[in-house]
Length: 581
Image 1 (cartoon, helix red, strand yellow):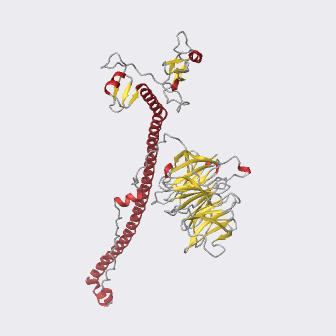
Image 2: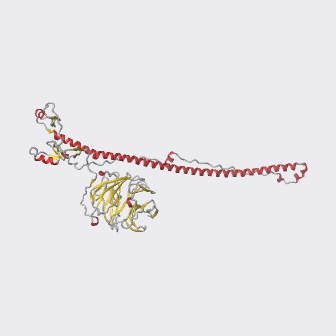
Image 3: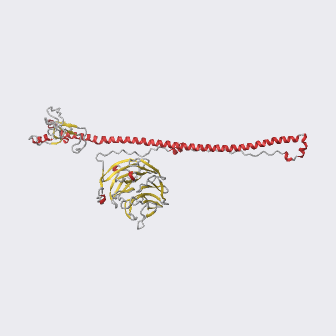
């Protein structure tokens, strides 16, 4: 038995079955599956009956089509004015249903439409919409609801972590308060003990003086006795004088200076929850027409080298997935590590490592703020190298942190570890000058790239840097509004400035074919994008634009499977695309 599918004829021929029902051949005593439909007879039929239908002289010229491409039979309805006639026409001008008599009587010269064809078209339209609802609208809505549930789960996890951090911070502060209170009480005890000892010493002095006075009184009374009257005459006058009262000092009492604190001070110590005032981004609804996005190259693609024949630029860019990076507020720079691990940094001195599933592995707090440069990289061995406020540090795969090198008076901006020879390239500036310096993996300086052969300065602000497969050093220089490319010797090969447009280069990377991918981002601009260049600097295409919901791209990198990762300045979402095949 055949399946009747509620889908649009022809255009939805291969669509999945939705709302199926079984249809048999309408020929008497034939129970075979229906495959065809005779539009004039309005009769479903099987393969064999179709052949018989064409052999019949009366029906050999009938229109027999695939069942799903059939014309739908108009329901029989009698005309109210002419009960013997069927309604079978539509007057386009009057928008009323007519029979043949109505048409000749009251609608001469009007545009009349065959009602059966009109009805069949409307039936197909309904089936198309039913298919769209089942195929697109319902699944997309369910996916959005799933996303809402995932967001709710994420919110609970984030707020749970926040509460945990709050409690930890509060307990730490309480411990510090208890510690300081204990210290102050101990100090008060020591001061009290010292002052009491002083007063006891003074009291002892006066007790001794009192004993002396009592003894002296007895001695003087003895001199007044008639028996010892001669002693009074003989004794020296000074022995009749009372010794002066000993001097003592009043203790200096300590003064307690109360601490100065307020709710605001305590709030700063404990932190607070901040609600971002940025407008929430709309949920992304997959377009009905297509899942992938078509590229429009402006020049012909070159033939790949022999060892890369298997990889070519796709005719479209397809979004594979996207994920939020925990522990960072944005994704200003990306460094791809081993086994799909990814380092992501934001504007607020946070540097996080995640695994291929987006789970947080570790977080590093950098001692500077507001830096949206490419200040970290991953070496061939998997070590993280990043700049801190005063030096460049290395984090080994077993999480040992060491100082890789000190720059001196120069300020490092960007870092890249060569996958060709392991060298470390550092973009830096000082007093209005800028350069690229090459270091060995040991930290030994071996090359400085500052000027062209004619003495012109190559760089102004080299804030992102990478290396191409041929050893060219590709630098995103926001000061020059250009991508500056030099060879291994430091000779300038070209500068890409995206002529006829305002160009603000940010994150930069290269791929296995030698293409250069660079972010074009300006917070005031309406057109932010990712440019794709040939190895020689020719513009190939805008690989990603605002039309593909790419709002503020500032970082790019390519993984071992040739997937493109794009990070954004105003969100911690990283999006992954497939653009090579």
